Image 1 (cartoon, helix red, strand yellow):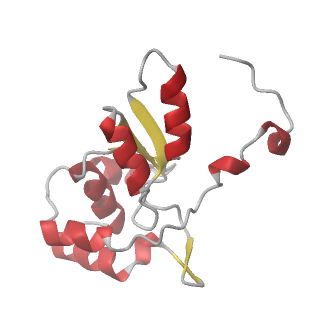
Image 2 (cartoon, rainbow, N blue to C red; image 1 turned 45 degrees about the vertical axis):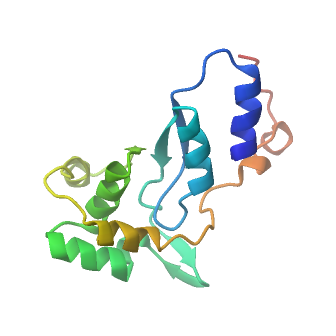
Length: 152
């Protein structure tokens, strides 16, 4: 969160180079990305394709089945996952996609032979719901996890 980043920057001597946050087409955290960029901090997208499922407008769906993303994927002869990874890379983010399947791991690496147009990037940008898929950062506390975190 922006306030977490501000608190950190108030006390550190060395500015972090990477901020790993949840970023995918349905949750883009533009304010956090901009705050980091002001200090030269690279955004690394955790859950860059939004996970397997996501609740969008009271509907159980997936970014992998999103009409906009699927149409762009078909236009390029790529998978929806490849389109989302390319979207991140063209916008300057680092991505860490997860898969246990060798063919998907190979597919995730095959994102450099095409470019998305400005219109396609804007179409994906427009999918932002501003709703987090993962846990709320403020809910991650010593009390909620029941264990001590040693001082660094």
